[in-house]
Image (tube, rainbow, N blue to C red; front, side, top):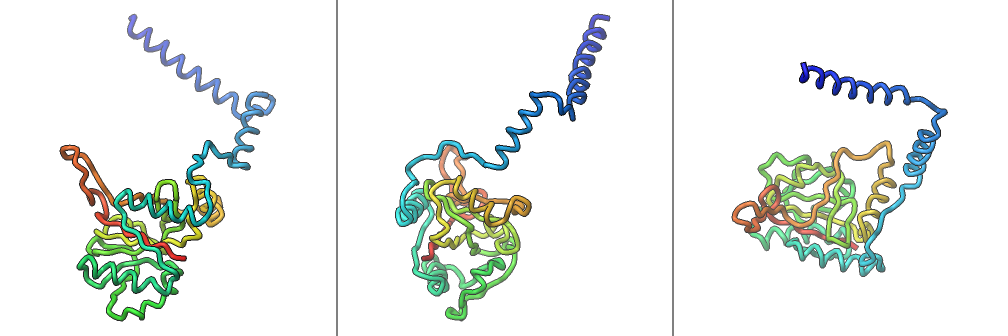
Length: 235
């Protein structure tokens, strides 16, 4: 009897809280609810930022240098080229340096499609998502974070997410003008690019190659994705 009584009391308490919660929904006269609603609307409209570290609040050239420095510190390789015209040669040179076949998979990004890849006629390009058999994938990042050396990629047909994870080598192309100092600035770029109603399905923030220390606490590259990340900064 005692156990049943305790169960009934607990159930009544839970149901009572639910009833009180439901009864308050739509109660416009409740000043607490009105204030909470106004605060929520204000936050959505203004998008206030938290505390942002000062180390990346520097000039443009310093941000680019900081991005490349931090990217290399997390085992990425980097290259800075002058224009998109230099991209085919930079990609083929990376393939030669790593004894890889002259073949890549890439999405439908218009910046990559506009490149004159015929400058390297031996390079075979496959357009579309990776099926897991590709050794090298090429993606174009929407932005970079200087304070951590992180490349930010938005999912979609332009840059399929599978290219970020399945090939052993991931070449990330990044426009120098898209490098921001901090994550908050990249979030602003994303809102300006897509709008709140058309956000990409996924955002991948890539800081160096995939790694794991699960086995004997030894860092192993390529545990859950590419074992090599090469970032090419343009401009």
